[in-house]
Image (cartoon, rainbow, N blue to C red; front, side, top):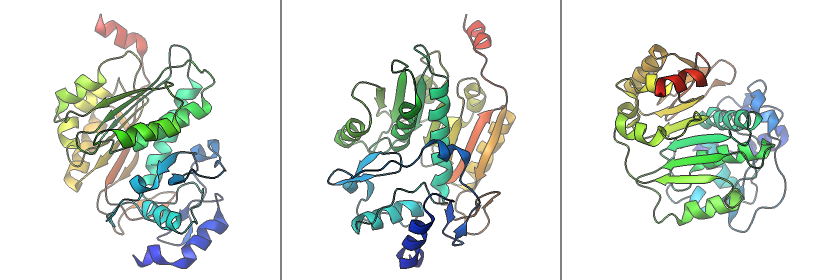
Length: 310
């Protein structure tokens, strides 16, 4: 808490801007930002009343982003944004160094890559399993895609799976309306719990284009979703996988399953770390959830999959 309440931290963030990613745990620059952030210059302009605006231009209702009794274990960037918003001092910086920095890099990379490959037949497919009340990372990925896609007719599909936190869907509906052109993306919402491999397969199987990103944050159910050969099934159906893990033994098992199934692990930070995780470029930082970013070792082979399905 002392870390967040320091008045000097805002000044440091303000003065550094986007020149470097700030590691607030060491109060120093952590080298240069990942290259992907340079493709998304921070937007400017006032936020709507009652809304927070981030560097991507994503507008989020303050009451949804900064809910009462926020856990101190959430990423520090979330607490700082809410504190600065309440004081009228919210910055439009790229993310600071914490566990969500790498998730931001994943959604921006997936969105940009899909945009660069887009056509009238091929666009964005992103699935967020554990989407919360507003489909936070799914909408962010779609926003990144639309910012760079040259083809206004390229497909855009966002699958949001959330059994518990959607309520009546009002917050998600408003968040989508504020941030995506009406009707531009197909938003598919699934409220039924995903309890295992077969449930996840049923959601992900439809469609011929691979998923650009599958983002899973399932509060421990990631074990049931990815066991039993599921990582091998996914390797030919997804270009990038981001898994938030909840428990060190779950993290180690999923990491092992991915490696055995032909995935290359790009980011690997274990859950519940205080001092023992150090990113090779960003330095050490505290994590609550574990995070694994993985891509297939072998590129997507459309012809091979089409032959298999005949």
